[in-house]
Image 1 (cartoon, rainbow, N blue to C red):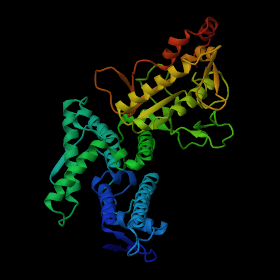
Image 2 (image 1 turned 135 degrees about the vertical axis):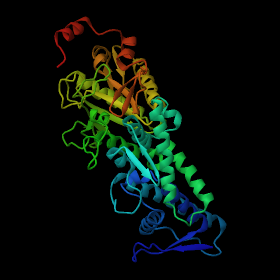
Image 3 (image 1 turned 135 degrees about the horizontal axis):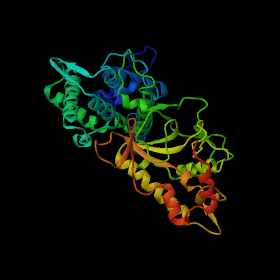
Length: 454
């Protein structure tokens, strides 16, 4: 039997005929978004289940859905039709979520919970019913990060005990607050299940609320953190740590796009995800200083790393190190260009994974040395670079690996740059190059000694 579902949002939208399994699959997907509560942060306002269902069905009806199998149709043909419909529904839902993710803050007039990130940026006291919690700045900072990247109690163990207790209490309060909005028609059993789901989603963070759009969600959230102090919500008292960074991603003159060496005939340039300008940050690693611009490639999940993209970045950085046309100036002299590349991961584990991939690729490149030439691993014919040029400019090739998080008080192992933790992960790009190719030529070391950094 099939259910007829009419989109109530528009009288001009044609009806959709769905099988029970199709209707259940859609309802389950929408329920995940509705239950999370965190999706409100991404979209700029709460979207309750009815609104989400109507909008998705309207999109699906407008784009078209193949008719159901006719009565008496052979089993194989009927199965093929249902499979195609299922794939169309799945693809349609992904497009639907991506569209919401690409327009953060839109349509905030839809009733629902206020955006949590803005609330955290505005104030440090929260009240639900008779319960009131006042958050210290360390707890407020950690909550902002948790909402983006996710976090279990173990993930914020580095916090002072008092701040850790505040964070735990606030997460409990958020779950109770959302539960109180469900209405009297929801059974206690379902409320308990929804609370469990919400706690799981709080552990995963906004960037993983909908897996199919997690890349665009993570990019949006990193950009939001870069801009939190730069463009604060009205009346906000943004924690000072966020003022250490600002975004120049949307700046038309920012050095974000470049023509890849292996795609000279392709007019579509490669683009970094973000441009970060360093403000009054004190805890910077060697190779960075206040005022520098960093190109950020954000990666959500271990499978997001692209080996070929790193090869392109390496070539572009090497061009800049030689003073040739490039979006990079690794010397830091030209503040209009990028000083370094940073991989921004969603977790410490994935930051380490990106570092391991970079080490692997560099070793592969360095192992191709023949007649003073190295193969980059791109292009046909293969792109080559001069081994001596790479060796003599190795110190300028700074690549950093970071994630959203705070450094543990009194503990080493990383550098705090605003809401981002830059990891110390052993072998750096210059060290790996020196290990294989040796130190730079003596003449270059002498020249470098005569030319102080500007």
